[in-house]
Length: 247
Ligand SMILES: Nc1ncnc2c1ncn2[C@@H]1O[C@H](COP(=O)(O)OP(=O)(O)O)[C@@H](O)[C@H]1O
Ligand SMILES: [Mg+2]
Image 1 (cartoon, rainbow, N blue to C red):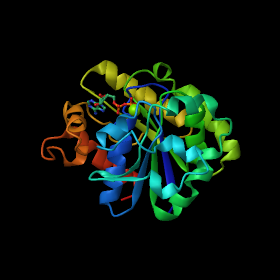
Image 2 (image 1 turned 90 degrees about the vertical axis):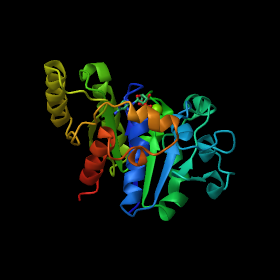
Image 3 (image 1 turned 45 degrees about the vertical axis):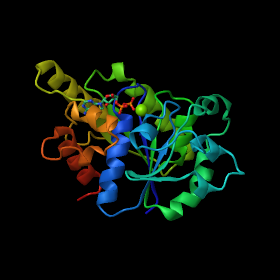
């Protein structure tokens, strides 16, 4: 299969990390092998997975002397190459957008899916992730298109596509959504319009806002395992995962 999915957004706090972890978990439950890569120097994904950011980490992917298998941590929540603070330096020092793609070659043979959580900037780490990816998923809160910087991100994706013809803008996931107000309903309608304008779709349904997300992360439990009978966000992600896997 060899799918590499980059989860991106221009803004912080739009649910990238939550989405990366939960999609990975759902895709794994569907019977596929999945490797998560935390490419954010804040390493929230590493923390939520219960992995250790103090040893080898994803910044070592860019060092040709590191043996690939040593980077992977096998946690109860799944396999991950952790992130660490030193990634911030990588964002400044990397000069080649193609470095991550080369580094991921050995993993593509081992895993059906690689899911990359990216930082909120459009720096070299994100462009490396997009160059390595076969699919990109954008997360956004139900705020206006321009407030989320979706247009800037769409522009970068278009540029990367010139060198990475495999890259598909798979869709937009609306997260942390409370669609009761008319204002939010209008914003959601606008996001659909803008998605069509940049040649993609909104992956349905929007992920509802619930405190269960933060609770699960603090307890280092995958969202889909956390209070499964009373967890609207988990229910919504399950639907999105079905859409992604064409089930
Ligand atoms: N559906 C949701 N409902 C409520 N809170 C959420 C939801 N998704 C994410 N959050 C919370 O919002 C914050 C930002 O989410 P996160 O996934 O870390 O975003 P990003 O990686 O884009 O910064 C976190 O505290 C997380 O727990
Ligand atoms: Mg994050």
